[in-house]
Figure 1 (cartoon, rainbow, N blue to C red):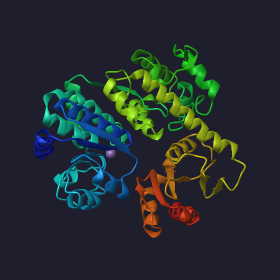
Figure 2 (figure 1 turned 180 degrees about the vertical axis):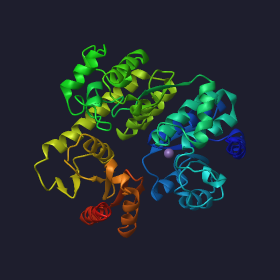
Figure 3 (figure 1 turned 30 degrees about the horizontal axis):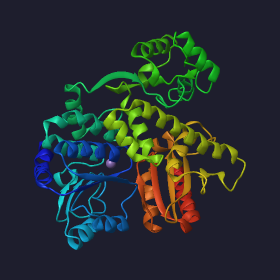
Figure 4 (figure 1 turned 60 degrees about the vertical axis):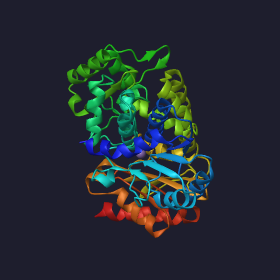
Length: 455
Ligand SMILES: [Mn+2]
């Protein structure tokens, strides 16, 4: 399955090997982009290349112009570039006459006159079949056998881009998973799929579980603590609450048999869990890599991956939790301010310039799962972003989605009307648009959602 992509990688490998000057590597700042950057970094290192790298949140035209003027004559873009390939073609290829390799999976604008590796050109779905880390891994695999161990980064990237469906890798990612399993870089086992598996204290994960309803545990903190203890599982370790991810396989089994004994439908909560060699679950680890970008230090993510620096990973994880707590604190502090937090058919959180735009998505996810708004089909969060833009993030209630609500479609349509960019899935969608359109956007989302929900 991946053979066609490997074949496509041949000219890129040749170009890199034969190029004698300095190379510029440009990556994107989420878990997939950081993983792709780490793979390319290692590959270039092993080729003995002289290179510089940077990681960007977005590739605006002005960034493309700046990169065109830098010293490097060959630019390797990973997880970024396909969506801006017109600018790349115009400013870097045509005006500056430089060489370009793009390894990406986003919808390409144009193919361009440069080496453009993208699953779309080969009839593969870039949405869930393979990520940029996967594409870049295949490039590295083609370049040298030494790079084979990097395949776990490809899976970390795919996980970060939410390419797993019901806990399973799909399409080309499945081929990559096979490679990783053969090389004993990842192990699959069954585990409980609870909210906050790696980020929330175990008893809270249990208490937030409402589907299925766990009598005596759901919304019952002391009940949840009692239950964990009754299974013979320690609730704390060195004074800190443990997450489900912190449990050993044995302890998790105890918890599962405890649930079955109590008559809870544990099998409904079971899912495949992928554990990396560093003993972190892949979801948790990809969240940490993603957090590096959110915290404005994406290069730390590259360092964690390349050096397997788990101490640094722990630091980032704690820092990220603090940022999330402070963003949630804003919601709590302002819950009586009807200009900021209000319910109007849907739940609205206006983070203004107080909630970092990178955290508004997490805030909407958490307020949706913890029942902050009593009974709304959708929660919409907005926050001020750079360049006079607003970043919006929305989450839909499961029942509303089951009744046909598709947030992604609603948001995408609205964005077309208001000169914004956005879209997503039925349960979660995001957007970016000019600041002066904030009220209009909120109103349109409200109308769009209520219209579908009432039908
Ligand atoms: Mn990506």
